[in-house]
Image (cartoon, rainbow, N blue to C red; front, side, top):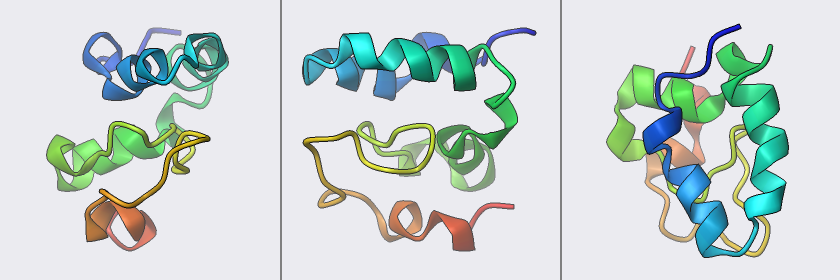
Length: 86
Protein backbone atom coordinates (compact mmCIF):
# COMPACT_ATOMS: atom_id res chain seq x y z
CA UNK A 1 0.00 0.00 0.00
CA UNK A 2 1.18 3.52 -0.70
CA UNK A 3 1.41 6.32 1.82
CA UNK A 4 -0.91 9.30 2.16
CA UNK A 5 0.05 12.20 -0.06
CA UNK A 6 -0.46 14.54 2.93
CA UNK A 7 1.97 12.73 5.26
CA UNK A 8 5.06 14.85 4.67
CA UNK A 9 3.22 18.07 5.52
CA UNK A 10 0.75 16.69 8.05
CA UNK A 11 0.26 19.11 10.92
CA UNK A 12 -0.82 16.23 13.18
CA UNK A 13 2.64 14.66 12.93
CA UNK A 14 4.25 17.98 13.83
CA UNK A 15 1.71 18.58 16.61
CA UNK A 16 2.62 15.26 18.22
CA UNK A 17 6.25 16.31 18.32
CA UNK A 18 5.24 19.67 19.80
CA UNK A 19 3.29 17.95 22.60
CA UNK A 20 6.03 15.33 23.17
CA UNK A 21 3.83 12.54 21.84
CA UNK A 22 6.07 11.56 18.93
CA UNK A 23 6.02 7.89 20.00
CA UNK A 24 2.23 7.81 19.91
CA UNK A 25 2.04 9.10 16.36
CA UNK A 26 3.80 6.07 14.86
CA UNK A 27 0.79 3.82 15.45
CA UNK A 28 -1.50 6.29 13.71
CA UNK A 29 0.95 6.64 10.82
CA UNK A 30 1.12 2.86 10.39
CA UNK A 31 -2.71 2.54 10.41
CA UNK A 32 -3.96 5.70 8.72
CA UNK A 33 -1.08 7.12 6.70
CA UNK A 34 0.51 3.94 5.40
CA UNK A 35 -2.09 1.31 6.20
CA UNK A 36 -5.52 0.00 5.45
CA UNK A 37 -7.36 2.83 7.28
CA UNK A 38 -6.10 5.56 4.95
CA UNK A 39 -9.53 6.05 3.40
CA UNK A 40 -11.04 6.39 6.90
CA UNK A 41 -8.75 9.23 8.01
CA UNK A 42 -10.99 12.10 9.12
CA UNK A 43 -8.19 14.62 8.56
CA UNK A 44 -7.82 13.52 4.95
CA UNK A 45 -11.59 13.56 4.39
CA UNK A 46 -11.96 17.08 5.78
CA UNK A 47 -9.09 18.33 3.62
CA UNK A 48 -10.60 16.77 0.51
CA UNK A 49 -14.21 17.83 1.16
CA UNK A 50 -14.04 21.28 2.73
CA UNK A 51 -10.38 22.31 2.60
CA UNK A 52 -7.11 21.75 4.37
CA UNK A 53 -7.54 25.01 6.30
CA UNK A 54 -10.36 23.38 8.32
CA UNK A 55 -8.17 20.52 9.59
CA UNK A 56 -7.01 21.32 13.14
CA UNK A 57 -3.37 20.50 13.79
CA UNK A 58 -4.27 18.62 16.98
CA UNK A 59 -6.98 16.46 15.35
CA UNK A 60 -6.01 12.81 15.28
CA UNK A 61 -6.83 10.74 12.18
CA UNK A 62 -9.87 9.33 14.02
CA UNK A 63 -11.37 12.83 14.46
CA UNK A 64 -10.64 13.27 18.16
CA UNK A 65 -8.31 15.88 19.66
CA UNK A 66 -4.84 14.77 20.66
CA UNK A 67 -4.90 13.79 24.38
CA UNK A 68 -3.99 16.77 26.52
CA UNK A 69 -5.43 19.20 23.97
CA UNK A 70 -8.94 20.45 23.24
CA UNK A 71 -11.27 21.46 20.41
CA UNK A 72 -11.19 25.04 21.64
CA UNK A 73 -9.60 26.46 18.46
CA UNK A 74 -11.40 24.19 15.99
CA UNK A 75 -13.71 25.62 13.34
CA UNK A 76 -17.38 24.70 13.42
CA UNK A 77 -16.77 22.46 10.39
CA UNK A 78 -14.04 20.54 12.21
CA UNK A 79 -16.12 20.09 15.36
CA UNK A 80 -19.12 18.83 13.41
CA UNK A 81 -17.11 17.15 10.62
CA UNK A 82 -19.65 14.34 10.14
CA UNK A 83 -22.07 16.90 8.68
CA UNK A 84 -19.53 18.09 6.12
CA UNK A 85 -17.78 14.97 4.89
CA UNK A 86 -19.02 11.94 2.98
